[in-house]
Image 1 (cartoon, rainbow over the protein chains, first blue to last red):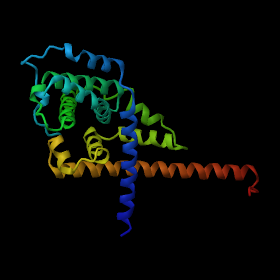
Image 2 (image 1 turned 90 degrees about the horizontal axis):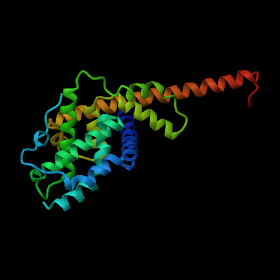
Image 3 (image 1 turned 180 degrees about the vertical axis):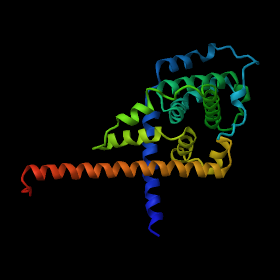
Image 4 (image 1 turned 30 degrees about the vertical axis):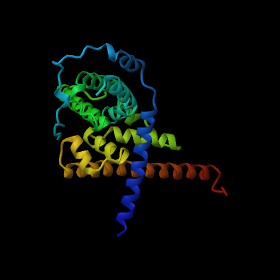
Length: 62
Length: 185
């Protein structure tokens, strides 16, 4: 069937572009305020009452 | 886990974490805010991280849960009012690789976040369907469906762009031939 190889080549091209986009983003310098945050982590008081709502199992999405 | 070791590992994941945030938000400022919230939540809940397990996957889970939670809260806000919409309009047909990647980014921006997320986890980070399903909290079938729909939409957009480029090239060639009285070699 002619469709299969064509779809696979589009998928490969798409994955290649996805990787390029991701690499561009991952190679970007972190903004200063995020660097500052990392420097300040040790000074952040950790309490037992921290909201752990985002740490639970992933929520199902649409 | 020793906090200094955890901090060092956390820092080592920062750039990938931000790139994952970009794949969800497609907006620099929103991605930065999301990473900041994720780092703070991870740091203040570090005792919940199980040493020996995958910290990157844990951070991704916090980040995506925060993203979808924020999105639900801000359901009335217009998404990326200065980003994806204007970008999708302003991107011109490409003539080199860099512009073609910009076109691809614009097409990617138009997909639902759920599809971009799966495309990133599987197409870029090489997660298995099962791993992606666990991170996203959905069934494997849903992951496959989102992946296929995302790829189909991107393929369609890329085919249209390629076709547009061909037509532009043909039109330019025709214009040159016409201008030279049809004597172009």
